[in-house]
Image (cartoon, rainbow, N blue to C red; front, side, top):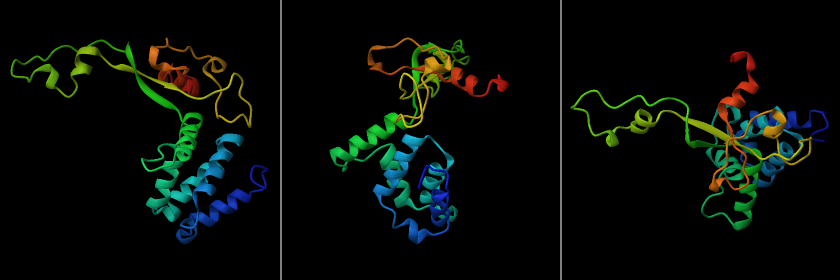
Amino acid sequence: LNGHGLGASDVFVALLSNNKQLVRQVDGSTVQKFIDFIRLLGPLDTWLSFLVALCAPAESAVGAMQQLVLESIFYAGERATPEEREATEKNKRELLVALKLSEGRSLGIPLGSPLSSKAPPLGECLSSTLLTGGLLDIVISWAHPPRWVVGRGVLYHGPQELGLKPIEKTADDEDLTWVSLANVVWVLQPERC
C-alpha cells in the first residue's frame, strides 16, 4: 500500500513516533525497504519521517536504531559482510550527495602573511592555508541518469538538465560530474542571490 497515497506509511510513522518498544522491534530489512521507497518513489517526507521516527521516537534518541540507519546508508562498518558493504555503498552512491573541496579552485584572494614578528611559523597556524591560498570552492556530485523520472533508482536530475556548468574533471574523479555548491544553491533559491 505504500506509495499509493493511501496513508498507510503515515500510520506506520505515527505508531513508531510514540512507541520505543515497537521501534526496537524494527530490523534492517524494514529500514532497507523504506530506503528502497526513497530510491523508487523519491524523497517524500513520509519515508524520511519514518527514518526520523525510527531514530528518535518521542524525541528520545535510540542509539541502536541510529546506528542501523547510518550503517544502511553511509558506512556499513568494519565487521559488515561484503554484501552489506556493497548494499550500503550503493545506497550512499545513489541517494546521498558527495562533497569535496575543489583542489586548486580558490574562490578568494589570499589574506596575506602574519603581521607580527612574534607570530608562530605560518605552517603551524590553524588556518595557514586560508591565509595563503584563499577559500576553496566546495563542489558536489550525485548519482543521476541521463534523464530522471520517478522509479529510476536515483533521486535527482543531472547537472546538465539543471543548467549547471560542471567543473573540469581531475584524474581521481572517476565517472563523477562535479559542480560548485554555490551554483546549486543559486538554482535552489534564486531569490536569495
